[in-house]
Image 1 (cartoon, rainbow over the protein chains, first blue to last red):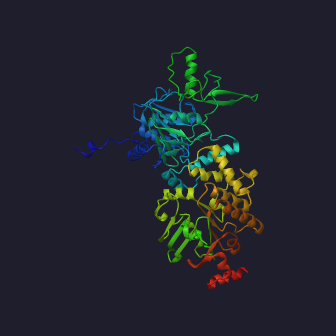
Image 2: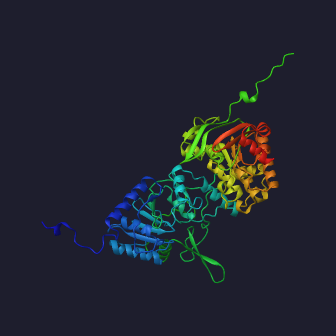
Image 3: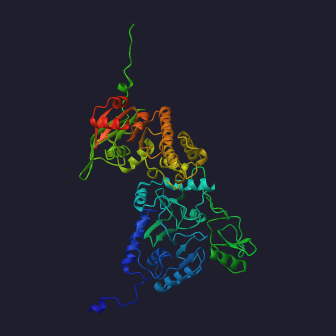
Length: 304
Length: 265
């Protein structure tokens, strides 16, 4: 027996780009994060060939989770075909040899920025969200050491102060994205910059959600069937964006989260934000056999 | 005719606040040396002394912001038991939020300068667990009204307000939860004389209406004379003289107190 036979053949890079120790560390931190839902776990956050702030946190989690049999879907602001989403998807496919897809129903791993797909995710799917700022207390407590202590004490009174200020100044809660939410009745997390529309999708969801901030080096998670409750006053109910009555001008679907597209004459039209949902609706309208999954929102309403 | 006298109230009531034999040193500097203080319900205890005499340290300890090397601190309140210095951080925070109000000399310490004034008061209520917007709004407004804050500036951030107004916001925040104990750390220092008189008026009125026990720290004998019932004179971390305000100021016994009273007059 020679040393040669015991060692692995030389490879230009390890599987999934990250080296073994980096992936092991991220795995361990993910397990911790799942064990304590909503609690931010620090991790090393390695270099990936992408600038911080472009989804390095989400990419590291995706690279750790992938195997050659996993179908990967990447979305950016709801779109599969934006530059950032396409680059990340191509990168994962290249370093991990995974098949890719745009269809939410076919995907095993979904990395996303700013949106959760409109179709209900299943138990066997994992959602990875890119998080720019993982600390919900930052607007009310700039000192991170004290913020950590506040998390430990579940001292979240000041989060409501933020909402109070918004109602006093503007007459309503202005928090449009990253709406602070209480996970499992214990930790307040920021659910990444998803719109208010998407926060109820996390509540008691069947899928696992992992949120990762690459620059801030924090991982947190929402395990399946976990309570995620947006912070509200007892007499001011939580309201999602008023998109239920809008119709997509391309696909004709109604009751989903829309992008507003300004027109030359000063008016605007709307386009469904989850691009693949829109594409599938158009293909079905054109007579193709397309499987449309069940959606979280039905007729613009989230069934409670 | 026989005359029956009730025992004086001071004999029959238990002191609300008791601090016993508190000592604290920072390295080689001794901030407090075996200091004891008591305050009866509804009483105003004044603490005077020069800068560095330990009066602010003592007040911080009464607000549970600091733990002494030795000594004990009790408050005679329902469901508050034992030496408060032994409480953990969580219990301290709840106690401070619900039972003790504090007004600092520097409003930056006690207020969030860029949030609205009513929000600053509401924060106290939020920490105590209030989650209804309408209730928060009503209670914050009521507390600000009680401290004679002009209600048309309700939602102005403290940074846009004058010093006297900032102190009123602090005061409203301190009394929002109707605390048993109100701590005032040089509440009128740095205000001009007329504003100072107005703030003192408000404090006096609150004290008479609500019978809050107050501990007021000041180096200004005029403030102590106006507000306090009893006074402690501190120097170099120790109490040199204590007694009724009139007694101390008319007939000071200790050389330092004499100096202080003469300097004023």
